[in-house]
Amino acid sequence: MKRARLGRLLGTSVLGLAGRLPLASAASGWDELNMPRGVTSASKSIYALHMMALWVCVGIAVVVFGVMIWSLIFHRKSRGAVPDVTLTHSTKVEVVWTAVPVLILIGMAIPAARLLLKINNNTDPQVNIRVTGFQWGWRYQYVGTPVSIISKLSASSNDASQMHSGIRPTAVPHYLLSVDHQVVVPVGEKVRLLITSIDVIHSWWVPDLGVKRDAIPGYINEASFTIAPNRPGIYRGQCTELCGRGHAYMPIVVRAVTPAAYQAWLKQHSGPPSEAAARLPAAAVTST
Image (cartoon, rainbow, N blue to C red; front, side, top):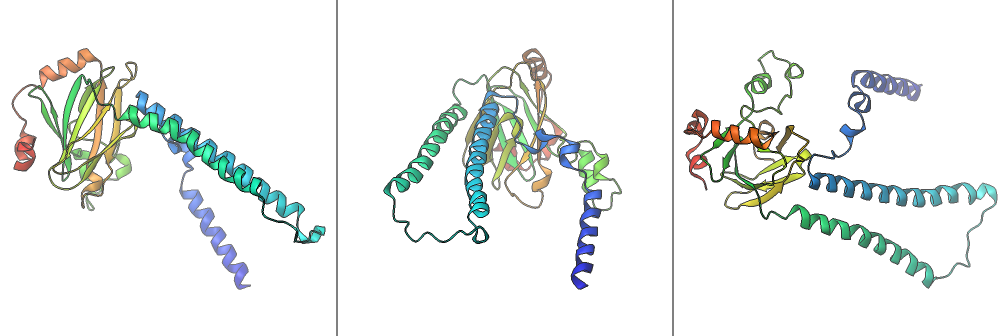
């Protein structure tokens, strides 16, 4: 009776929870569950490598679990199966089950090594941006221009995050993924990021661009990307390094525009430093 009552209780709880949580596949589709393809050649190559590894793992699982299930069904004691006491060491079997995994790993390592070389090729950029992480936001300095912007969590997301604000986070568009100032880049041109930090380790990550680099105090890490000419738009990311209590509140928003619109934006913002820069810690303003 106790087991039956416990079973009914668990069943009711699970069904109640399922009724409250929308299915991810129904709400957003498979693309929201899988790695994004992105809008750069690197991100698409990363996606292709990911899918290749996935299907290799699926194939291995089908073979291994297939043999296990077949053995459990057709070689069970109830069917008269008895232990084989005559089986001896087989050199051929040892060679096969060692060689096959080695060949699989080599087959996966070659395209992975090629991709690593590709995504770490930061030569000949057309746009250079110095990215400085701080607690909790980002500073973007466009090298060779007077343009410098401070990007922090948008006021709407910040207000909704306050415990007693009375604002429901679900009512805020792109909650915790929107900023007050977006970083603007041109499509079809190679953009190189020079990434560092002034306090603790941060990490600049935008999935659709295929870029994730740590921002480390005292070091400059490089990353680059080229957004496809036909894919202007807004691309969002976050800091992915636990950097303190405000870690969840330093999103990244990249706005990709046409080269002409980018040049117009540069001209418009080539004025004196903004008020936001004046409010930044001195170390952030003077860091190089």
